[in-house]
Image 1 (spheres, rainbow, N blue to C red):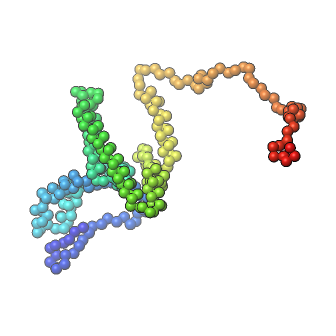
Image 2: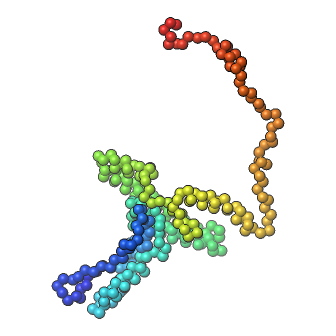
Image 3: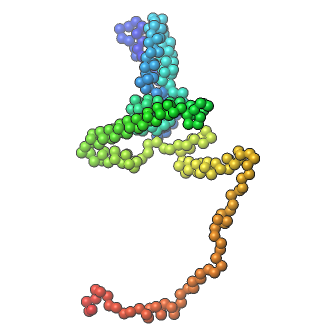
Length: 271
């Protein structure tokens, strides 16, 4: 969106470029996919990029199409993610997550990647650079403490905000306990196909873990691996003298009844 200032009139017209997918069927709970990250760091990069292109954008011969394409390119270069995120750990599902926390999480992941890459070098095999590991662990510990403090502060403010409204307070408590309806269904990607059915997801996990041993055995060459014996070999030997219990007869039952002692009930008034 923007304003055309060189229109030659007293009132500058406002224009906007929108992309509306009206023909598509909207899902009840659409998946939240993040394509752009508007963190403070990315916004600073965008401002610096636009400052460098200020002369071109403010030139009288610059058309609106040129301005729009330049601005869109600057946003893509500064804020667009290389791989879209589908994580549930965002401000839409967890409202206590702030842009600063998101940026800190990305920095923590970068520190972890640097430490993991150092494991592959011959100098620091196999545990990696100890300085990078110490830097990552200290930052992770500090970030956990900040996230816990922010989460507690958010839910405490929600409870104080709803004082006198027991229904809202219990909604917040149940949200903390995990007893609430999920707005986002669990998903699992298999062979490029996304699966949301819980039973199919469980079956796929079972198939994967059951096939790990067989696939590992197939990749090993020159090593003889005995097949798994049948379960009968792990069971104890069968006992020849088994126990046999015969059915009760009418004589046995009558004999038991005759041996019962005659007693009056405790609540009998004629005792």
